[in-house]
Length: 327
Image 1 (cartoon, rainbow, N blue to C red):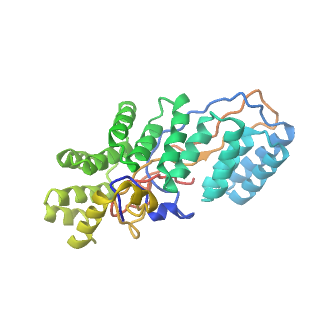
Image 2: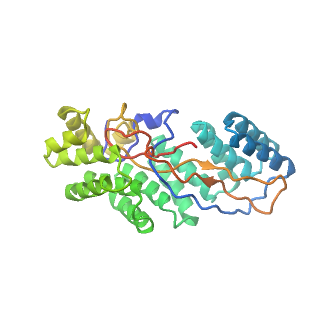
Image 3: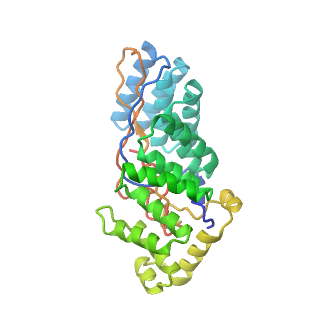
């Protein structure tokens, strides 16, 4: 465990990072691009992939999307579908390659940039993630999820003033978003605003989105304020020594060390060692595609919701991570 930066635990570095890092997200607006749409063969293969996915056959869908991408290397639509199914199959390397190919075709495509940024965050490269989120924000200035993601990326780099600006913009758009509120509270904890952090997590626990992850984060705040009894009550299963160790690691790690080992940002209670970051982002669900080529390419829609699993389980240190929940 380490870092005051919002680094996602070593768990996030694993290929198996349960794409369940963070919670309830609004659907990503679809957009069009000037990149040529898929031809008849590609559209037919994409249609077959969509049908396979609708039946729950993710492997079959992935095979069809890959064939579409191979048949028409310039099809942005095929690459976006391939990236989406990669996320659904928890294949972060495959998803990254597909979204990277999509970005090569359309450098400013917001969906490709957004998803590449998510994956970079799970790998602990906050700088690269922030660069991708900046691209996505050029055309998605009203998407609170993007401001939340950018805030996490900046907080991981301990650029707290900039992180606050992004969280504030996101909260202006979605005042009740639990992921934004959670991460804002963690930023308050990291910067020493303990009364503010306590108020933030207490409000979350009194809301319909109440979750053990918020309770654990509040326990860290209570411990920092010297309210040990309250902290232990909020973190059953953790002893005082464990809580102190978690809090100390979270507040003291230097940025360089944090970037090298994102251990504190666990998404899983069993592996948790630091606050749970809440990215509240779910992999996209491809829209149906007609077998006939069209003038433009619709971006895959995003799965809007992910209950209490958005950084996937509650984690002892609860900075809700990326929360990419495969449908």
